[in-house]
Image 1 (tube, rainbow, N blue to C red):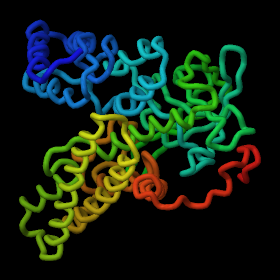
Image 2: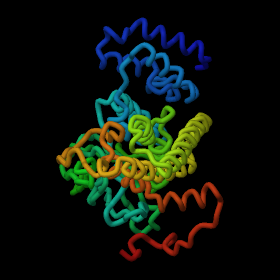
Image 3: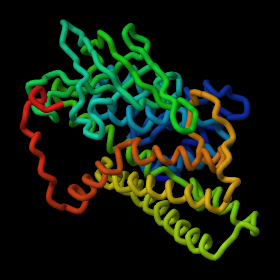
Image 4: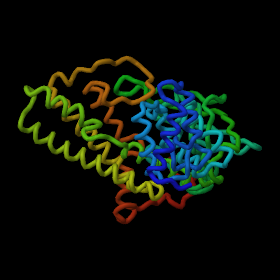
Length: 394
């Protein structure tokens, strides 16, 4: 199908006339939107899309926003939208795509990511969770950590080692795990903010049908790269208005509290405001590049910059507030559905921003990716690259 922007606008307006947002129940509206191909227009017809260029989603979103249409609460289902869906689309069978993509986009089923492990640290390829074939299923044992939204999730994208005789980047297979299955245990991880936004997940003889495998056996690392590249774009390249994100509350405080101002703080705020605007515009350019293909290593650079900038801005905010910034509103143990940086106080932003350099790939690993895959610098020596995983020192 080929539609120019005007034709697509007409199509959206026809849809809105048939499903007025003011009188159509939210669930019914979202279901009809998906079935009309207006969920993500670059996806295939029948899977929420129209086989159109990714850039034309902005046309749809603008029309729906102007009409006051409900959205699918993307912050609550961000892992599904930003990481699971592109991977299922790229590697899933037709049956898998039709089973998982619709309830994922509608928000009926929340997804989480079972990648990181306590024994592997930043070296994801060193993971030790094992999956052993047993007939038409795989029996999985291991532990995952730093799993956002595991306490709400129905499904998880999971990588596990299926052949320990292969080097660590090979012998890994990619699965979709049902979080309600026997043997899946989710435990909260209380973090420095007082919340338990993350979890650790224990897998004890969990049986995953081979029909829930994405990609070929042993090809899980390549499949995981699709997930990781999309994750870093989703984290580092999110669309923001000017003065959106972490810089917004600092600028607002500066304008409303002149008694807090000093020359040195003014100079630092100007630097960070410019850097935040550069990051925002770079993110726009990155999204434009995505129209022509899949996300590349540039997303790692964006995510790296996002973490550093957030930490510097939140530090400046505490300096600006002085002793006020040392207070913290609430240490209550909670298991939130979303991360809300701008809806909380300065203390929360400062503490939570520390995690930005860990989640979605540590800053140290991302520096290597940028150096080697963006700048073309020589790779670091890796003595374990061709050694069987079972023979690695642990």
